[in-house]
Image (cartoon, rainbow, N blue to C red; front, side, top):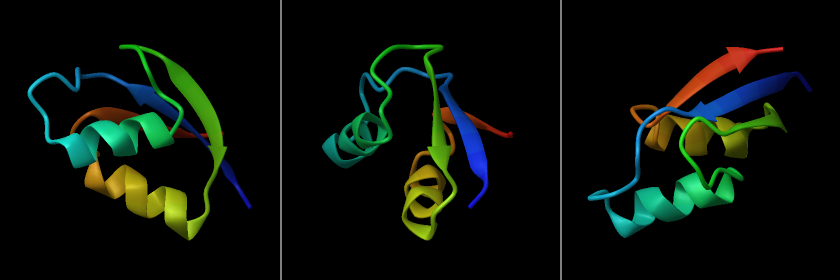
Length: 59
């Protein structure tokens, strides 16, 4: 599987609890924090749900 870099670019303040937990499940806890994850269908689905809060870059 390919790896992708996910960076949180917007705050989760005033977002739904579901979006907050999705961002946390991706491994993000602070603004401008980045994590490298495998591009599995589950991760891609999580990113689609919070794509307005994160930036994606393929590695």
